[in-house]
Image 1 (spheres, rainbow, N blue to C red):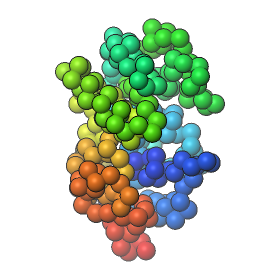
Image 2 (cartoon, one colour; image 1 turned 90 degrees about the horizontal axis):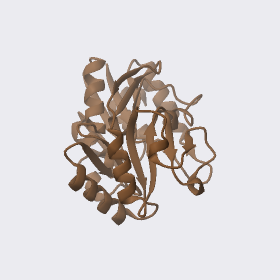
Image 3 (cartoon, rainbow, N blue to C red; image 1 turned 90 degrees about the vertical axis):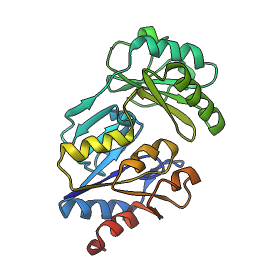
Length: 253
């Protein structure tokens, strides 16, 4: 038995105007699972942010969320977690609030501090400042930099320079994901491989924060459209999750 861990946004789920999944991907995933293999999620989203848009569509065998800071099994039991100290949340927010939209991932929700950026979703809670967050279970921070990958790169570099002894920042295309030092998508899939006693775990992702996952996987896949730095870490370039599954299980075509 082996597994495939997939990134969510722009790998499995494509967030155009309505957002959509590729029907052939979904069919291939279900057949992959029916053959006894595991299919799971590996995303920077918090658990509720991954669960809501997938319910009734895919039954994941595991959820690696918040860039590896939390891991859940298929029954939604938390099997791994690492928290960030509250003092760091406030410091990062104060340092970068003029450069990016700050979202704090904790207690199942995304906390936002500017009501102008609150969205119509049950995963968002708007609070005035980080001091008003009502939990110490803070797993990650996302700093959103829409359409500005250079700013994302700069913020990630600055966070790692200032706080790198305690946390780590990963650049995405239009955001920066911050988790406790030692957490990553790569560590997440290694944990899953050991926890479920898997023979092999493959991974597919499309962006910079997927690089640790691609480096750790036994077989790493990305897309022809992915950034060159991401492609260089993959074993194979594919057009879809369906093609990835057919490569892993030729008999399932």
